[in-house]
Length: 253
Length: 348
Image 1: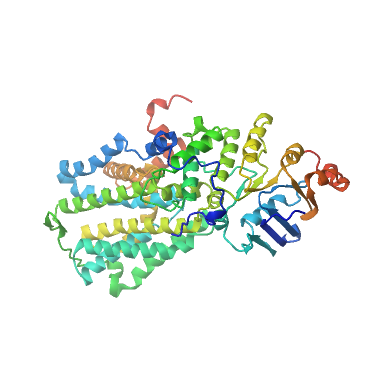
Image 2: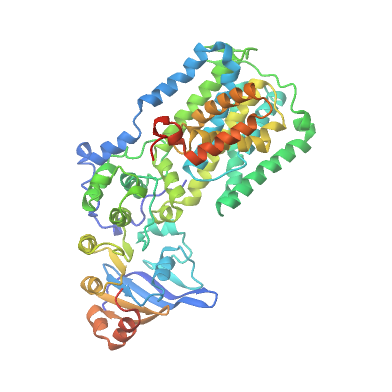
């Protein structure tokens, strides 16, 4: 256990859907600058936990803390404004807008201009350059003017992550960021995630064990909604119980 | 609205990698140029805006008809803002039209006859109605929104019917005498030919169109499209979905109220008809004919609808509704794009 500052924390978090308990008494600490992975077999409750952290779902019991403040009942958009940002396992995009419009809106919102109704989108001189940088990094320049609904899957996946980064996350929750992305482009996405400033804390859900153990310094294993094992990456990788549970049940992908 | 900049300033990474050096690269930013392009005036937009006063100038004999079309167009544009942009389906948009109409008529009759003051009061009243009823459309599916909006319009209809000491009930509100329209260029009395009425309506149509154009090109306007497409993601980039819906519904209601007030003022009369279900259905039809979500659908739809209406009712007075129905089915099945491009009909 290091003594680094805890940024995001859950205390005894529980979520029940009728008789099913997808999140069962989860106490999780994400430290400042963490490269933290959340793994577990299918149905272990990983996405449910992300939904609880972002406020999409309300917990049945327990609490969520950000920088020592209780955010358990905070609305999802307010958590984003405090820096808790996520990407989705299944792309959630604005199909009728273009990538440029989507990013410009996100950047404008980040600058506090999201409710401005008089000046046009992009009138602020800070919006354009920020969009340029994002479009360039995510190789979306040549499709920036096409409708998002018409983009190829790979491009939409990149936009999904670009929009999260445009929110300038302090805690970034990546829900299977490379799901469905071809082999060659996975590295690209991880290069971008790895290049985030050290102060940004990252919680990653991923099935590809190579990626997980290349990326994460700390690993939490979730089984049946509860924390099964937690520790630094090497320890967890060597834990025979984890091998049994994870590789035995879920297999690889 | 409470759109605050990102919280916790000092804790932010001092130079986030996604942001280029602030403002330094502005002139060479291709994104900035592209963004500017979205709101640039197109030639056909300018032509459209020029056509409005020109039609008034060149067709003096048709002023009453033009007035009627302009009012329907404005009503449809207000629906486009909430339906086409914010994605709120409504079967009760007549609630705002009727509320604006009755407010303007009652104000002229009971308080003072100045049309511009009356219009301002009607705008305020319908905006308040939009604000108050917006809580009903925040949650729920499209179906619940259809039912709730329909319900609100029905309630107002019955209220106007029952409060006959105030509204004249089923007989309508008679004896509304309007004063002259006071402008910097002089005061103009509404004339029997409708020339002043038409100019007054056209001026407001242009003003509202300019305002809505401004709105839909702003971050607020884009955030409406964003939450229409995906409310979950809209919240996940920090947009307050509820606040947006409330404001959009309020603005849409206010402009719908302008359309109603214009009808009452230029006709010097209002009746239960302005709150009737057929108003809500018709404006939806007009917008579907003209197309949603690109700002001018209401205008094109109103002209097309009126021309169709007049054409069909001259040809077959009793069955024009039948042919409107046929047209609508063809429009939806074939698609507007294809229907407007006859040369593409042969191709697959």
